[in-house]
Length: 196
Length: 271
Image 1 (cartoon, helix red, strand yellow):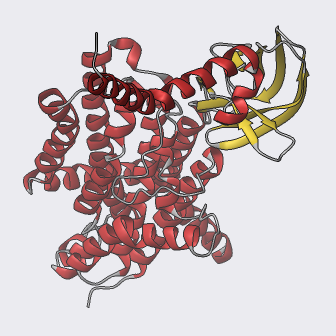
Image 2: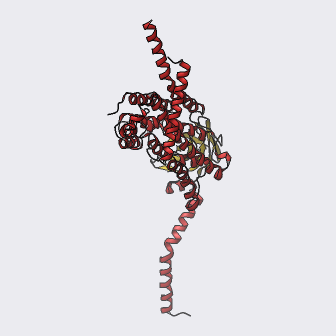
């Protein structure tokens, strides 16, 4: 049997423990309820689109050359159950905006979108990401998908032109050595004709 | 009156005589040895330094681009060495008193002097490219020598002819060897690149007619390598020279300055 002092002591400890742990219990309860009941709203709190993602970013050619027409495939997966309207797919090439397209995608489906690009030479880094404007004006963005591709640049000029130019230069320089003799013979002939 | 055929042959013979004399002079003055050592030594730096302290670039094109971005330095040095005193030396040292009194035509003397300066400069550039090609073969195998490498080589030879013409022109116009050599050297090394940069970055105009601007084609032909924009006289900019107009500019510089140089030298008289 516990005396009154012991009971009060136990009660105080219980109150202290409840007071200390009550916020943690409340928090965990809140998360659980959100996860189970309000799954799509989670994005709103985090400002990140987690249930709609880019699953693949590919190019129609793996080793393109400058000037080739390339199709960029952006595959988007909607893990939500409801359809999403006005989802923006933006493509950025070498840190410069390439294109933005507004699309819609049904719930729990995967869809591929196509973008067309005339390849420019050199190393190209494409970054695709999704964004969705919420009714309250906030913009939710997905994690970007990044892909790098090397585009073989067009060769500059040809090898024959400098060879031809060099040949021309040598002919003119070496040929100029005979110009004085040709010139003097011509002038000598003219002067002898004049004398006659 | 001599028959024209005989006259032409004599002029050719006299030109060859001047060329061989000039080559012997360059050899005797150790200019040849200095230039050849530079032509082998400069590209070796690009091989030894990465081998000891770092690693080679990923591709042969990148290696060639880096290595050949300094070939214009060699062209300027050897061009100034061989052509800087070609004409002016005869007037300054009064050796022309002996040379110009010979029955040889003055034109053939000056043409021979020009060719005598051009040939060793072309040889030096060829040695530089040969050394670089051996390095590329050693690092990347024979597949590393691409068509772009030969393109770069022929453009470098063409640039050499125009650089020698410019320095030869200064040698014909100026009165002192040192002035002619330094003006030739600094015009290609500093003056023309500065003018080119000012036009590009301040005036926003493409300086397609400036020799040192079109010289960028030597490395620009390596399309697979990122542009360096470095090297002596090299500059990264918003413009890049057009291949065909660049070649035409080099040809025009070579021919016009060569004829002007010969013409002015022919008119000069010993004081």
